[in-house]
Every structure is written in structure tokens, then in C-alpha cells.
Image 1 (cartoon, rainbow, N blue to C red):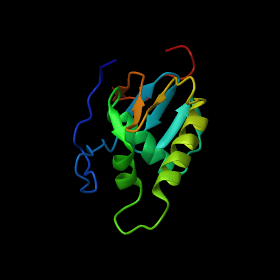
Image 2 (tube, rainbow, N blue to C red):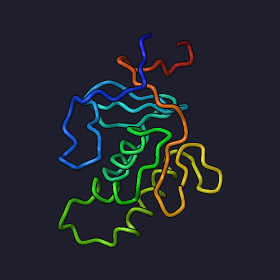
Image 3 (cartoon, rainbow, N blue to C red):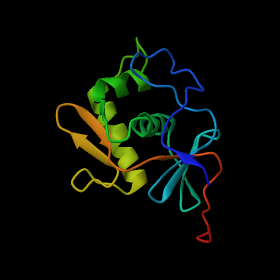
Length: 140
């Protein structure tokens, strides 16, 4: 199976500077999870994991830059456009905590999302870009 670790620029990034575009189709795989980019869904071992929209967008932001720091400000800009009046710090924290919960992750022992103090967050496992859905029945 042909896999790659890059994100081709197939879709706009909403005009947010410093935020790369994400592909509109294909699959991303990390650990026991995969993301169906066309359907905007997360799966663990073939079972759908329900994610609210903001949590899914936070996941994509981290998956676009595995191993790099995604700043809290970059997450804020992606999740809440200019003119949105919310408590950004609390909402970024809540969104990342919901993502960690969905992934079975903890800030104390991160398997996927590591907190970088006073900077942001980093996705700490390799992410594969797949053209075809991954085999989920264990026979693949």
C-alpha cells in the first residue's frame, strides 16, 4: 500500500496565516485510530468515535503538524474566527481535554497530545496519509 507523510494542498485553510490546508479526501492513520477526511470522522479499530466539530478541528490542526508545536493562538484562530467572543483560554483547554478523552490520552502520560508549557500542544506519534481506508479487521 502506498503511504506518505505529507499533506497536499487540496483544500483552502480558511485564509488563516500559518495554518496549512488539509486534504479533502483520503485517510490519516495514527496508532489504532484513523481519520476519514471526506466524511470528517474518527475511527478507533474500525469503530466510529464521535467528536464535536471543534474537537475534530483541533485534532486536524495537530495531525497537520505531527511532532511540531501547534500554538494555543493557532488553535484559537482556527476554532473561533475573528469577532467571536468566548473565553479562549478556557475553551482551548476544554477542547483539547475533550480530544484527549476521545483518544484515551492524559496530559500526565501523553500517548498522542503533549502539552508544551506556555506554548501549545504537539502530536507525538507518526501520522500516515493513506489513499485507501486502512484494514480494520486485523487481517490486513
